[in-house]
Structure formats: structure tokens, C-alpha cells
Length: 600
Ligand SMILES: C[S@@+](CC[C@H](N)C(=O)[O-])C[C@H]1O[C@@H](n2cnc3c(N)ncnc32)[C@H](O)[C@@H]1O
Image 1: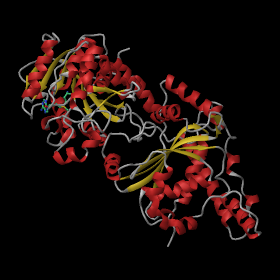
Image 2: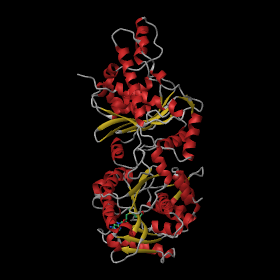
Image 3: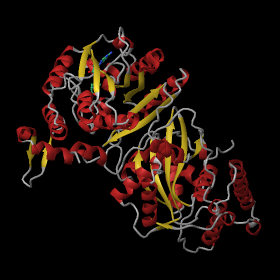
Image 4: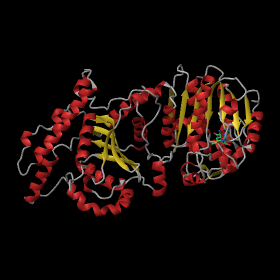
């Protein structure tokens, strides 16, 4: 397997692999250093080292020799390869396809890779003279002059201008557009996504014209969409890379507005760097990669609850305040949790519930109070009341500290993260602690949205009895009602109505304990069958890397817990990963009860 491909598939530890290659090429030995123990490292902040790595990878894996100026974008090979591999999936490798590359850069990397890998031929455009000079040199030194042509265009020219005066048709178009709309944006998030290198500490050598375009990438791609409406099937599949998650939705909205019949998105994950691909077509025979569709269809929507201002009587409407409150609840319920990300606007935990500790909270509290009154020692702290939480709220000021103390990998720069949480595609630091954006792999317009998952693990489902989604809704309503009734019954002054209350757990299917080993097996099976949701895939790799829970530890439910603040509004989402799905509804109901806004 080629080393860069291996890097792509490994999706991480790029450095380790890269340094081996740099070392492999003795002529690049200057760019690397070897410690006394023989550990080879390269400085990613050094443009010479970055260039050496790219050149070594291209030559070693693809037999492509390139010359690259140090004052222009130095492409990272694994990221570029991701895009080429995705295109291969869409258009197939069988036919010698002809494509367009908007903005070849000095490397001319996409045409060179596409030509060498698949025999594709290219018409490429570029605005920058120095880039054109180097791109043509690179084509020449790889003897690809008959397959790749680079033409100079003006900045307002994209597809229409490039194809003016010709009737030629193309199988695809591709583009890695300048991401930023202006210097401020470029500077503001430079560390998060300067170039597309996997590490924020790497150098960006991109010139202004390479990184900034009026209106940013959304306008750039929107113009391509507008022009495609005129060109229609002259290009079979239009594609572009996107560097910001926000841009994906904006471009999808635009495609929908323009009534483009078919489009798809994908996610490229390389180390800590995320990029997105968008593809659209007017040819309904185009089939976008199947596996990803399946993934989208199989992904069950999370349970989401909005967290209102003043919920639980807390005054500060911040993720830190509420994560503190919710973590307390989780701890009191003796639910194990593991922090995947702790940020200003986004916190993600993995919850592992061993047993149902959330039913009958009031009864348990009364029992505890009784014990306290009879001066018996209190052995098991139970769920804190809202009042307790309110009383403790002043501690919230220390939350950031607490958060970073107890969370395994903390946020090292809040302002950086606020940008990251809202705008950037870069994952947070630390191998095991990746920032989870909402899962969004391939989707297509007009895919019917799934009904929310409402207990598909229930008895009927296991018996194979088909039920309408409305049935599930009614079921959940009934269960929620029952929960509420129980709560109300239990909260009546001094009257013990426990006997009247059927335990909620009896309404549900019996506990279904899974060991960590079984969970991992289940995840692997889903992955092999291509039915694993993104959340499951990420949890699997997280499990494999970090082993957060012991091998034999059993659990009733494993779910992802996300508290985030988006456009000023906070929400809590639970995504099922493994175990008894019904219990996730109960836990969500429990959180909802605790997060009610007290009447004044
Ligand atoms: C982000 S760089 C990508 C370069 C290369 N494709 C890569 O992936 O490494 C964007 C490139 O587009 C070029 N560019 C900007 N506006 C353009 C336009 N209207 N037409 C063609 N190229 C353009 C820039 O000069 C720059 O080389």
C-alpha cells in the first residue's frame, strides 16, 4: 500500500509516518532531525520541511516529481488524495475521464495525481502567474503535457469563462477554492485552518490570492453552481472542496434553492483537520457512493431537548454552567462518563449506564432523608435537587478550572475554541479527544427523513413485528406520561404513593446488559456492514485508542451526550451507541425534568 494512502486510511498519526518517509529520502535529511534515541522528527512550521515532505510523498508513492515555490501553498498529499479517492468513487475508474480543475496551484497536484492514478486528463485554470509557471513546469517534468493543460484566467472566471468558445464535454469538475472572504477572517482563524495541514502548528505559505476570495468559499462555489445551471450536462458531475462546516449547509441551501436535482456531501477527516466535499449533477444516472447513503439512512436521529434560559433555576446561560449541573446529575446517578470534548460552546461526553438509577429518584431521596433524620450514615449520595444546585451556583465561577481539572484533555485556549466551535473545521487537540461535529456524511436531496427512533429495541421490534412510527410515538407518549404520573405521585406532600406507581422499568423490556467486548464487536460488525453511524465509528476508534471502560464492565446503555450552544440557544442531545435504547429516552426525560424552568 502506498504510504500516503496508508496515511489517509490511518486518519491520524500522520507525523510518525511522514517522518519515516522524509528520512527515507536522504536528500531531504536536512529537513528532519534525529534524536539520540533514533527518533526522527520534522518541524512542520518550517516551510522547507513541509515542502520536503510533500515532494517526498509525491515521488515515493506516485512517481510524481514536483517543484514548489516556498511563497505559495504547499499541498498536503493525504488531504488531496482523499478528494481524488472520493471522485473515483463517484465517476468510477474504468473510463479515462476528462475533468476540470479550477485553481491548479503551483503544484498542479490534482491533475498530476488524477492523471498518474487513473489516467484522467485535465483542463486546469489558474489566476496567479507564479503558480502557472510552476504548474506548467511540473506537468512538463512528469511528461504529462498531452494530458494536462493549464490556462490563465481572470479572478471572475470560473467555469463559463473557461469553456467559452468550446463545445467540449467533461466528466467532472473539481476545485479547492480560496476559503476566506477577507484578511480578518484569514487572520482570525489562521491557526485553526490556515492551510489544510493536519496540525494547527504547521505553517501556511499560501499567498493572498490562494487563500482569500471575495465572499469566501460560499460565494465562490455558489458562482460555480450558478454557472452549472447554464452548462448543465456539459459537465457530468460538479464538485468542490469546502473548508468550513458552516459553508456546507449554506451551499446545500443554495443548491436546493436553485433546484439542482441531485447533490451529495462528504466529510474528509485527516488527523485533526476536517474538510468537506460537495458534489452536484443534472444527470440523474449519476449514483453517489452507496455506502455513505446507507450510513446516512441508518444513522438514527439523536434525542434533542432544548435548554431554556433559566432552566433548573441557573442564572448563567452558558455551556459551562449547564455542563457542570448536568455532570453533577450524571455523577449522582452513578453513570460513568468519559469526556470527548470540553469547549466553550460544545461539550461531548460518552455516557455508560450500568443500571437504571434514574427511576424513583424521589423515593430514594425520601429514604435518604429518613436516614439522615435518624442520624444514620449516608452511604450513597443520590441525585442533587435543583435547590442544591442553585445553592451551589456561585461555584460556577470556578467552572472553567473545574472543567479543565477533571476533564482529561482540556481546552487550552477559550477564544480559539469559540472560533473553532462555531466556525472552524479543525478538531480539538489530543489524539483521543476529537471535537465531534454533528455527523454528516453523504446525503442527497429528497431523502425522506427518518422518524425519530422511539424504542426500536422494544419487544415488538425484537419479535420482528412491524409497527408504524406513530405507534412508537404513542408508546413514548404513554411512557412519558407514566413517568410524569410517577413523578407527580411521588411528589405529593408526605403521602407515600409508591405502591400506586408502577415502576417505569417494568413497562419496558428487561435490562439488556452488554459487555464492552460485545459493544466493540457490535460496532465492528456495523462498520463491516457499512451501517455504522458516524457516532459509532468515532466511538469505536475512541474505544480502541483510549479504552475508557474496562473490558468486562457491563453496561445497560452507551450513548453520546452533547451539550452545545448554537446561535445563542442551548440544546442537549443524546445519541444512541449501544445497549437498551429505551433507557436513553428515560434518561432524556430525567434530564428534561431537571431542566425545567421554575415558575416564579
Ligand atoms: C486553495 S488554492 C488550491 C490550489 C491547489 N488546487 C491545491 O489544492 O493545492 C486555490 C487556488 O485557486 C486559484 N484561484 C483563485 N481564484 C481563481 C479563479 N477565479 N480561477 C482559477 N483559479 C483561481 C489560486 O491562485 C490558488 O492557486
